[in-house]
Amino acid sequence: MKIYNPILSGFHADPSIVNADGECIIANSTFEWFPGVELHRSKDMKTWKPAPSPLSEKRLLDMAGNKASCGIWAPCLSYSDGIFYLVFTNVRSWNDGPWKDCPNFLTTAESIEGPWSDPVFMNASGFDASLFHDDDGKKWFVNMEWDYRQQGPRQFSGILVQEYDCKAKKLVGKVHKIFLGTDIGLVEGPHLYKRDGWYYLVCAEGGTSYEHAITCARSKNLFGPYEVHPANPLITSYGYDCKLKRAGHGSWCKSPDGKKDYLVYLCGRPLEGTERCVLGRETGIAELEWKEGWPWVKQSDGTLKNCPPDYIELNGRGVVAPGCGVVHVAEKYEFKNKDFLAEFKTLRIPFDDKRFSISERPGFLRIHGGQSPSSCFEQSILARRQTDFDFVAETKMEFSPENFQHFAGMVYRYDEKSQYLCIVTQDEQKGKVIQVMSIMPEGFSREMECQIDEEKPVWIRLEVHQKTGFFYWSQDGKNFRQIRPLIDASKLSDEYGTQGFTGAFVGMYCADLISYKKFADFEYFSYKRLG
Image (tube, rainbow, N blue to C red; front, side, top):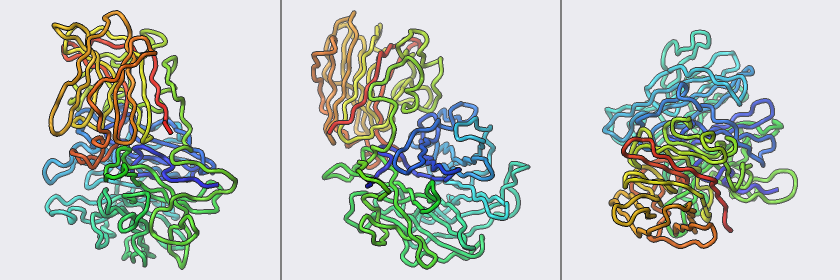
């Protein structure tokens, strides 16, 4: 059986994997999207089912005011003595001068389903923190160090280790700098493992773009010195003509049966003819083979090489296409219960009755208007990842705007500076209209205003093929009209304009820039993979 990469398609960056009682669980970064940290679980490495996000309440995660691509960076999920440990960074600022405000927290749970304990602050000396459980019972907190005094790669000044006291719930003792990185540079994303008396340190290097890589080093002593893998890096796409680009930042664990080791890592698939990865950084997988005390990436043809393989092979027959091993809730999401929330996210704030309700009008999702599309506080948006290059999304909405500052509809976005909205609003002369708003680093525009019937609901559809997309609208659900302009999907990527770390989302939106009270009712939302 061939399992093709990536196994988690669409924005699933910075994977951390753990084996807990015969089940593998992957945790991914979510940045400014709420709830924080995405989880998927599998007992066969073929089928991945979503698990509840652990940071699902404001008491667990407060991201109000976080700018784009702040929030949850590189969580680490570990398991020891029947307890799950989740370490995460809630980045409050980055790219504003030489500093990064990156407080690290630890929360625990007896079940991956929760409930999770109140997060405990650990430190803020650097991001991408993890927790290592040594075989003598001690626990060690690991993070990269950010040195604002330096320039360029030297700001990533090394990997720190400090003991964690479980009873006191705090870091204790001396801080040790155990690794400075290699000549690749930009060392971050550290994870520690122990095997046959060796400590193995796995780090991300090379940044987050096309030069990205994973470095592996080992030592007989936790505090080093560490010798680097003889064929460093362990995995990278740089210098290879491979399908998966940007390979780097990952971790490994045993398979559910304990017989093999697997590495998960982030990767990207650019749109053909471009370097733009509209699906963001995704999660790939590779089998590891041990040779002379070092891990090596096993290729699809059985050879050992440090580039990402197209697929892994498992027992059985068949082929699983990229991302098709994920069990989705539905293609058409209805709002009779909250099952749909397994695949939808809000921005910075939780899904609650202040902004979102499925009880005020049973069978509908009511979204109360929030702040503008540029707000980093309280936007009323509910969206899911774009997981395919070719897809169609559709929703049916009832909305009665009374002012041009009331608008609602469908949003297709990367962040506050790069997004498209197909909205229904009110115009003083034309009455109720539908239009497309384009918000891009180069400017804001409103296009193709069409007058529509005041009393009828509106269907909005977005169809995307690779880099090209169009919005459509209807008032009977059968006859759809295309509405210009042409949508350039490639602009919704890390590589365009804003230089962030996420990926494209599509979903429902409502704004009331007068009183935050006007609402829109959505009957359903559908997302279907094409091709």
